[in-house]
Every structure is written in structure tokens, then in C-alpha cells.
Amino acid sequence: MASSSPAITLYPYQQKWLQDESRFKIGMFARQTGKTFTSTLEIVMRCMEAEAIGRKERWVILSRGERQAKEAMDEGVKRHLKAFQMGFEALEYEYEGSFKALEVTMPGGSRITALPANPDTARGFSASVFLDEFAFHQDSRKIWQALFPVISAGHRLRVVSTPNGKGNKFYDLMTASDDAWSKHVVDIYEAVRQGLPRDVEGLRRALNDPDGWAQEFELQWLDEASAWLSYDLISACEHEGAGFSDLYQGGPCFVGNDIARRNDLWVAWVLEQVGDVLWTREIVALKRATFAEQDAVMDELFKHYKIVRWAMDQTGMGEKPTEDAQRRHGESRVEGVLFTATNKQNLATLGKQAFEDRKIRNPMGDPEIRNDLHKLRKVTTAMGSIRFEADSDSAGHADRAWACFLAIYAASGNPGPLDFEIAWERQTEPLLAGFF
Image (cartoon, rainbow, N blue to C red; front, side, top):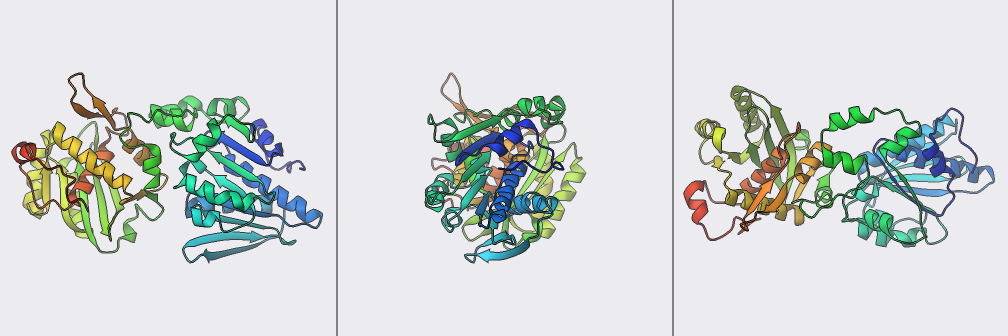
């Protein structure tokens, strides 16, 4: 393959990836090291070379969602084509009536299409394929099963990602002991050593999340055994349409509210019920906000959404905010929940079931939300009892996770407020009874 344009600066690890002619090629790269940029450059160059000798190339880019597919097309493919001063025609259309496809056609007929990944889009073409951030694709194993007939007729396959736990096909491919794949691994330290201009220590301090740093920059396969929600489970419930208040459909809403005043976060997590699925419409996180400011946010949310039930942390300092909220909005709509060990276990169990059953949709690609949900751990004490722990850092103390679980509980159909110090501790049926 011809060398790249002098106007494009490539670091040695990018050049190595670009010059690797293997049919099956997989790369595990740290975040923001240019993996998508380099992979789309290879696609464009292969198309240009084919057209120079009168052939056509057909490539499909499968990304984790429509936003990521658009980014690969706009910031990758189109950017490279313009840099090479290559003419092309851009097209956008509905694929199979459900997905937005972005496509460019070059003068000689070569085509590059970018789509959100799922088993249906994976099997719809005969082409070379680029799987972008494959570890974060929902149903990655089903996508993989659907994909191989697509590339069986001599086409190429490119797979790149950062790690996302061990429960996905990307982990299987990277850790398999075989020589079918040409494998590239570049963590943040190696990328910087080869010239990438990044302040490693500055990034680490700014992230302030050891697990997030280990996974996304050091490329470690995190031990998911103690995590209550695995990264794979969290990613499977992410959706591009979640997290936007302007997409609220006017349906019944349920809110979970974790209370804090100084060190941790005050979080209100708003869920709208659409059919049998709970869609996250808004997540408000405040740090060191006054109680008056917290009350003002709560009142605004009550005005904007049709809130059927608001479940809030009544523990400790939450007593007065709960009492005040019930006075303003009614005890039938505001419920206080004491965070006893039993209650936390019931809330966590209820929340996990919603994730396992895919009954919740959360914002896609938000590292703060993902890491907060993942940091909650189930711990068995020496006496055999269960407790839930989370490291406290600048991003909170799993405050978003508890707000999410409270919102799921609020939507679970529980008939009314409970005396959590007495009634809940005596109950024989778990909260999960009657869920959805």
C-alpha cells in the first residue's frame, strides 16, 4: 500500500497499523490515540489504490451507535478524502427502515458505508469490514456470528477497541492463542513514548478513577468478579436516544434521588416509562449545592415531567429534605428510603435485574455514568453478611448508581410508602416481586 500524504502526521504505532497487510487485523489501543483515524485512513487509501487500477473497493464501518458512525464518517473518511483532494458523493439513507446509514461513493464506484452495529446490519453486506470500538458493541457475539459470511469471499476485517471487561467477543479475540490474527497493542505509555503529545500524569489526575484509567489507558482486563454491574452489562443498556430531556414523550416518570451536601454528589435520575422499558431522560448531579438549590432543581423537575413517584435517600441528612419534599409535592408522590443494609441489597438486586432484562436505557458513552455504575461492589463480610461498597473519589461514591436504583425502585409498582425501619425489615417478600 502506498505511503500516506506528507500532510498527515502518523506516529510509528499508527504507521505500523497502516502498513500491516494482514487480512485479519485487530488492535487494542488506549483512548484518544487515533485508532479510528488511522483505520479510516487505511480504508480510504485502499479505495484510492483500487480505483487507480480500475477496480472497486467495498467497505462497511460498524460503530457502536449512530453518533459514533457519523464521527467515523465525518472525522475519518470524509476528512481523509478531502485531504487527498479526492472527489466523492455523500449520501444518507434509512437502512432496513430502522438505522441511519452514511455512505460515500468515489468516482470509480468504490463505496464506504458507516452504520450502527447490530446482528442485522452485520449480515446485510458482502464487503470488507471495520469494527470500531468492538468491545462496546451490544450483542458482540451475535454480531460476530452474523459477520463472517459478509467477509468470507476474500474481504478484509479490521477490529479495534479499548477493553470493556471480559464478557465480550473482543476479549475472546485478543486473548485467543492462535496466529490467525495480526495483533497490535498500544497503551498510553507506549503511544507517548512514540511521540503522541499527551500529559499522562495530568490525564490520570483529571480522570481520578483508578479502574477507568487501568482499563481505558493502560488496557487492563479488569476483574469483574466483585463488580455488581459489569461493563458489558452497563454497555448493553446504553442507547443514543437516552439522556436527552427534549426527547421526553410526556409519559409517566420516576425519579431516584441520592442525597448529599458536601463531599459526595446530590443526584436526581429521571426515568420515563415507555412500554415496558425505562428510558433515562435526565440526570442532574450537584456538588456542594445548598439545600435551597437542591429543592429548586427538584421543583423544576416536577414541573417538567409527569412524575408519578420520587424515591429519595432519607438516611441521615436526608430526613429534612424528604420531609420538605413531601410537604411540597405530597407523600403519595415522594417516598423516603432509609439506606439500611437490607434495603441497599434489595435496591441493588432490583436495579441489576432491570439491567439484565434490558429494561432500562441509559446515555451512551458517558464515562462518568459508566464508571459510577461499575464501581459498586458486593462484599461478603467475615460473618457472612452482604454489604455494598464503592470507592469515593471526585466523581462521588456511586451516587449515580444509587440514584438509578432508586428510580428503578420507584417504577417497580410498589403500592406506597413504607416504614423502612419497621415494615421493610419485617417483610418476607423481596422488592423484586411484581417488578414490571
